[in-house]
Length: 229
Image 1: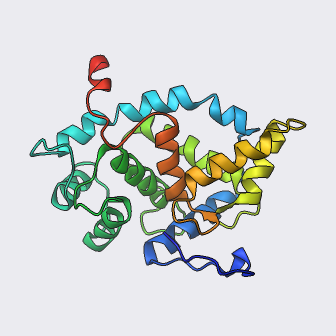
Image 2 (image 1 turned 135 degrees about the vertical axis):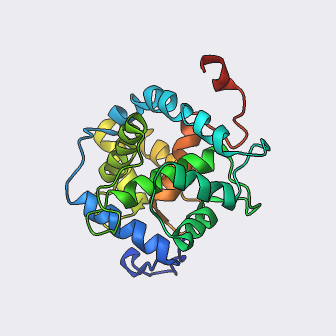
């Protein structure tokens, strides 16, 4: 997910490991130039139930493209999904996205991985510097939810470098819980939950995977949302 910083090395020395990661960081930096509407970390937490509800509505899309019904989308099924949603990415880009979000490396994308992938697609498609600029996924409610997630990341990334550091997480939570002794511990716990590769920086993909866990969407999330379907 990114190169590990060596002892004494500045976070500015961080280099993306893949072309896709570089594109995501670049797209996020351009989005960050517009600022965030979030006022505090608590204001983001208050949106969790609505975000959870809207993300679970993706399940019908996920099941539609899980052709063999095995609970995972394979690369071929993902390409068919992109064609149906009129997402004009090249095969190379789709393969790169699949590889980035298939965190178990089992060639099968689970529901939470699918949500993360669609949100990354949303960010990339709405980047004015991209070939796909301002085209849409065709899922208005879902796009509004993805924008909320992008906005939350922008709020956390105080120096607008496309990634969130431990200090930035502490600063964001301290803005909400000033004077509370536990705020530093809360910030550290949240940061550790996000920083999967332990390199001291959190990229947007890591943030999204942590977010799906925070709102209760796991990789084996199979039946709970069928009730309201």
